[in-house]
Length: 156
Image (tube, rainbow, N blue to C red; front, side):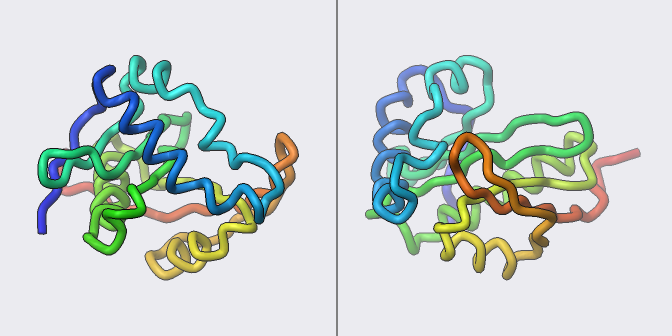
């Protein structure tokens, strides 16, 4: 099944915020507060071209936030609407993130997740991310991970 992935537009803001709210709300009780992605300014992120959306059946069902760092791409956030989970949207967004990083010339992609999001940790490990370290930042206990990317065939 294919899903269109495109840059988010200002018209997508409400859908992006709704997906984030629904996807992360279950973690509020585990963490004891809103997770970082629920606090982000998505209008600003969309304006700066950092948010992609996955469209399924004409509706935004997933979001991806990518941030360029000096030596790697940061997969800052990936979320899928709960009703669309299990359709392969999250997997497709993760592949898109890795391809985007590789095409941009990065050899690594990084991410971090809250240690209370155990489902995410096991998923990331299964698809090749390795834990690099743990730290507490902004009152959140985070696990940092990295994945080495295959060399992009698009490189000269």
